[in-house]
Image 1 (spheres, rainbow, N blue to C red):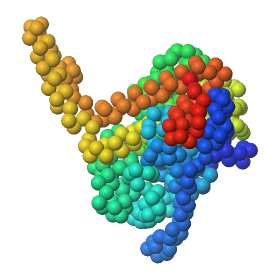
Image 2 (cartoon, helix red, strand yellow; image 1 turned 60 degrees about the vertical axis):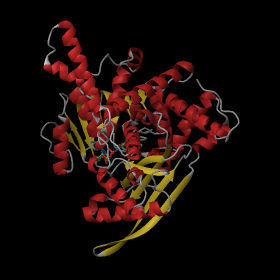
Image 3 (spheres, rainbow, N blue to C red; image 1 turned 30 degrees about the vertical axis):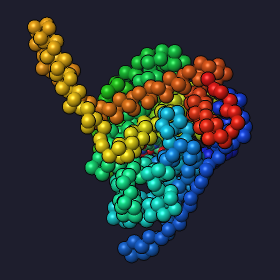
Image 4 (tube, protein in one colour; image 1 turned 135 degrees about the vertical axis):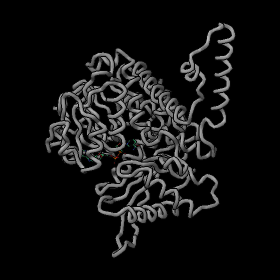
Length: 481
Ligand code: NAD
């Protein structure tokens, strides 16, 4: 776990303080600011599960931070260390993230105290089923109110089990598939969800590197190619981010930190091979393509261009922030930089792309999956072949007018109709670019705001305040930007 001992405040207080910074910067009505910060509802459940030779009682939470838009959306986390404070903090981050990415959802988060590796797959299925029953019975699992997604320690497998539980309870609900996102493809999932957060981070970084002034302010040279990156966590988010950046953008991954230590290779690690080794052995120790050290946390302080914490919250804290030697930090994980560390890093001029913006790809594609489930049709089904036909007609017209044959490879590229994956990627890319541009507009409009986190919160708060205003819950939101 991080080093919260050195912090004077909890994770949730830290997030609230970051929000306060933004509300103060734009002079938002303090009553409205308090309304926005408050966590709307938290359910705690303690439920018994009869396993083969014993009965165990499990503790879980679902926090709905904001229901100004419905459903409230958030990841479901399985971890032995999860607690209510963390779930509330993560739920609030989801509210702001959805607003930054312009997704019409409220924010939520779920957590179950469990060390998954201590249970068989059949037991995990049983426990997940029981937890989902607890949530559904209390209206904390429903396509229209609270919709979980994968997070730390969960994947499409758990989402399929949750969907099954919901379907058993409510077989008549036509929209039952939409009760959870991040499902497997053949169970109502969408193309491109598994890797969505990593892909979104790649799109966000590409957009960042399109702005020469932003790159220069981070003390970096132009272009992603050749940038040296250190990753912490090679799970869903870390792996896909590292894979895309190294394979498609020429980023050199010099270190990967995992639970058991760090593997370093200044020439660049093969991300796919490290992942394979991790899957086979449970750690990075013994990976032949790099030098191993058991002190993973120290590697966060390695010199690099881009530091990508993609594991847990509070990894960069008051105790190590002064020693971070990265040009920029990309918050792939939620809350990896504490409030106090954020202050230190801001003073030191380290650029941070904040979680509420940069890791929004997962919830963005979850939104696409949810709308696909409600429409009961995969994206592109109606127009794909029609687009192909139009493309072919265009090629035939060009050939008739010019008297020249268009090479088949070129003709295929021009006439190809968009698949679901093409559309998902296009929507994700657009979302990340748009969000970054909105954040930059706030930086321009409020010269006193110097960092992307505060600017991202301003983007979010402006949209949420407007919703509260539309609902008549406040007299006058302070107009922002
Ligand atoms: P995951 O469980 O797939 O991966 C987490 C990885 O971190 C694992 O490989 C684990 O071994 C490693 N890890 C755990 N403790 C570590 C430590 N102390 N040091 C180094 N490595 C450690 O989880 P994930 O879905 O990739 O989520 C990671 C982070 O990203 C979380 O903060 C999560 O909330 C956030 N996030 C996830 C998504 C998503 O779509 N899955 C979306 C947005 C944000």
